[in-house]
Length: 102
Image 1 (cartoon, rainbow, N blue to C red):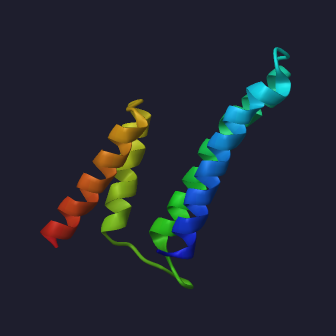
Image 2: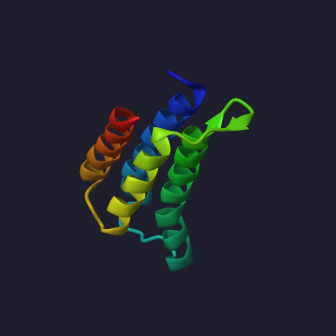
């Protein structure tokens, strides 16, 4: 497993832990609106950046291969508001089909 994949898994788990711990720490107090918007956007931006880096980077060079088709397919599925599990399945299927075709 590559370092980027390990970092992605750890950050995803940490994001969900922080999100689940917030109600325990805050209790009934709501976050300020601006901070709430920022908190909602940060995990998606971070995970998207890590996905792009792990898809296109190979050491010190940029590689375009079947993983890019999976990333594009996942982006389209997210844009269509598909559930997370569906996004993962669509991305894996697109990657597998491109690898099968080449």
